[in-house]
Length: 129
Length: 175
Image (tube, rainbow over the protein chains, first blue to last red):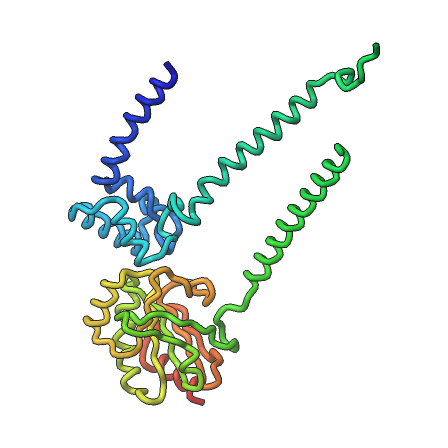
């Protein structure tokens, strides 16, 4: 039952992700791109360069570019600093993986400590015959 | 065995703390690194030209007086300053090297700007703004005047108001 639910959930998420990649909206891109001068996302900025970038995004959406294509064009101009989140490939993948590894390691340590604390001291004593 | 593990864990934690402390010291030390300012040597840079057909290398021009102007198309005062700089570049041709650095800007917009204002001096392109922090840029436009010895002798934050102000700063690079 759980597997079926997970499958249904996954299948419902994939099409929307694909649609977002193929037909990105102005609002979502403005939330995923950073203004190079003020370091906030475009939707939070009215700096002149942010206004120009919004205009660029609008024109590329109208031209039918995908989300990745628009981001790539902006990275080519301004560097990776324009991306609000690191890319999920290459070295930048570490930024995504490391927090998960840290969480798992933390959970492991906590589990081990909890197991040790809940053990009664007499558990460690050798049994007397 | 358990005791060995405990000691190893403590040593690991100590190494981690020392490592983080080292990073903090390094960060503070690098933040204090001298930025471009009057009396300091001009920081070197090597950037592509705006047209993309070559490089602008500051080290190649040390020994010549330089005017290095940071600008962008979205900067309104840069538009009024551009003709002033172009006229000066023509007036001081063969005596002073003029370098424009287009920062945090669309390459295409900058090319159009250069064509519209008939700029003939060297233009470097720094789209990602790599020079912004090392040079201590606070806003645009910003202009540095460098003498033959490679020392910054004048620095203007904001728009150069007129020819007299520009000439006075250029004279410092020639003396």
